[in-house]
Length: 59
Image (cartoon, rainbow, N blue to C red; front, side, top):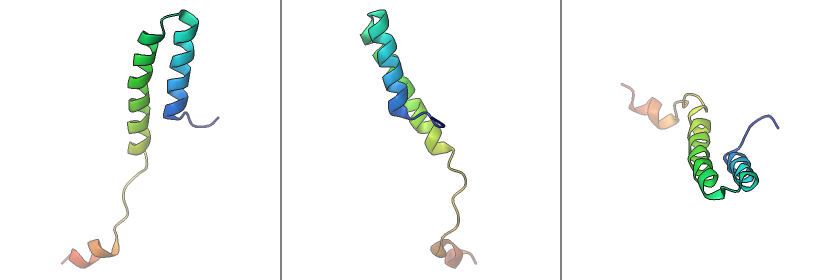
């Protein structure tokens, strides 16, 4: 697995919660990590290329 998905993070935290018998706490941490991983993966996409409309508005 090259890239960890948000669902994978949630699954890992859920399994830790089941093993430690404190599922509620670890699932809450998993939800926070789910959101953080999703945001970081969206941020990594790089700069947006200019579109045709952007070129027309430049004067």
